[in-house]
Length: 150
Image (cartoon, rainbow, N blue to C red; front, side):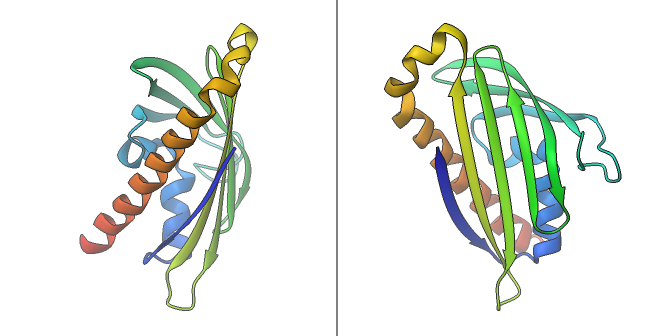
């Protein structure tokens, strides 16, 4: 499991709207080749029940994953459950305001191999951690570009 925190200059509300819409993950996560929302959630486009189709790459191979928003607390928390052919993921994104007007984002990613592939889980923990670090570095850079662009 990976748990990292970044701080961004964007307000909590704007940061939340940006990351709760998981179709943006292709813009900041180098492990996501494509992402699109295929179903809106109840009560909000990215709310509980929203569904996203992602094409992800890992160790040179691409595969399809479906992510569904399972928890949604505006401006504060979004949890997404992902399912792919050999993997299950839970991504938890927590946001809190900074005194500067920016936002602290804590991202927790729990990746679990399924089926026979789960036997390789201990061997791939370092690769999973590296993938998570690159995703958070990408998110930080993406927010910096968004702030400069305003």
